[in-house]
Image (cartoon, rainbow, N blue to C red; front, side, top):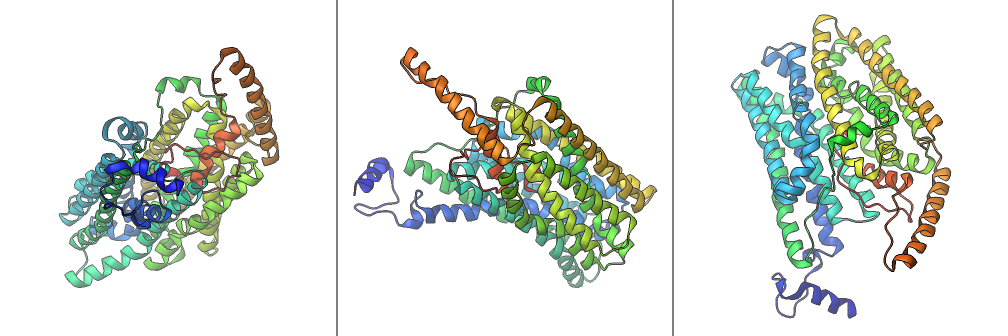
Length: 516
């Protein structure tokens, strides 16, 4: 009864959805779990269209190259044009959401960019103008990365504590689902359109891509519904709009430690051997292993399929065991073995691609949280933004290089190139281990050692806080968050389960590279 009266006092007369003397039904009450489940459904589908259409070129690689009369270098430009705007937007996305548009309008605007970009991309194919397809991918990229930031801002605004583990895990699975469905259905869509049109060609390609744009329209509808529900909850519960919490100061770059720069090197040289490979993998499997297009698309999508359930599980294992550098080392070695199998053997590629899927998921769980160990909390926004920026720069440059290598030297040299990139990442991992050992930054501590450090840090902070309260007659200044706490703050976005005593207050720094 007391809870009901408290709720009535909070809602006041502004609750227009409740008639006189009537209480809101569970599904209409923003504070009820059933209503938040409905919000979660729309939240998960918010990015579905973006992830579905991101790899449209990979799913239709042979069709795009044949119908548009392209070589591999020109084809890979479609991925490069997506990455170019995000070299800058990684720093601006959170700022635009916080200070300019707000979460609701910002989400709708970024969804519109994704939708319009895909339509332009499809129109370019339909009209047989490749430059228009490139422009479409550029516009699509403007919205894609920032929409991921908005999606996670909504999650932090609607869910708290350990609920976030499940929420981010579901968002991750939905992202994987979008990519997987695209890889396995777009070829079928193209064939059906070709039958309806009467022949294959750029018109069939354009219609197929326009059909794919329907998923972006669906995501735009989800953005509109989310905006309405969030506005309604703000009115009823008197809550504020969600904010990303990002603090970007480019002057912080000069203070980055050697360990952080090594993490950046690992990130860039590892991911350039993953996403560009998937982008042009279909033709590789057709030419080397004599697969049919459907078989090639299926094996090319296995990385996304495996990472959907594996990422939360591996995140949980990393959280329970610690030893992040050790896990990163294992992931890089496994990835190197997978690329060597693809390059130098004719073993069934399902083996190598399955290994690649597991190692890719493991590296994301172990690498990205390490940033929080080596930078102060006030520099985390800059660190993650810079890490995302140089990753997109690397992906754009390497995508172009990959196309040139395939056209001039073939796929064997390309695989050797990918192995070389992984070897650079491996040397950076070894260097990171020794730097961490000499500086004692705790990147490779076990979970037990981190728990002990957390306890000692908490006791030390409490001992410093109590005298301050006595002498100053007021609340003491909060002690800096420990490295353990910072890591847990960002680890939960990967789906890792955190202990009951750990805080899971998050900012929305989870960009596409973690969710991919």
